Length: 207
Image: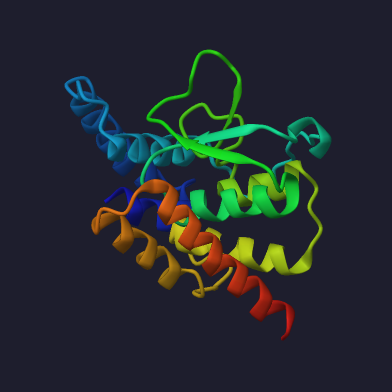
């Protein structure tokens, strides 16, 4: 139901949007109170709810950061990575820090030594109407045109809103989810996902 609401979020100014979102939010928060095992899927729903609550149509400016300040870092994200997390990790490794390391955790560590992305209260995550991949593009001021095309593809596959009418990454997303269902380790999903994005990037550059 939330995915269907998110698909129509550009009409959120109508009363019907709020009438449908409020009960869904209330029901989820009640269920969350009894989630003693911190279910990873619950974090996905929480992130979607927060996005729907704060999204406003139109462009939203984001604070810029310097690439040099994020070199040699370890990045943390949620387990069982899907299209936005795998794509974002690929972007980090290819355009921000070739030596970046990645780990997976259900919540952000309190020690502050890692850089968090695409998880609750992460340093880099969904912002306005953007998925995490798009947020990274804007905050690190990455200008590569091919990567921006990939960002549009990831947006539509991750958010399922047809904003850019790009379906190319939907298949990659399903493959990533399939590998997770087969029980592949998170790092292996990431490695294979990197190969998918390397191939997609090479294909788009030759067009």
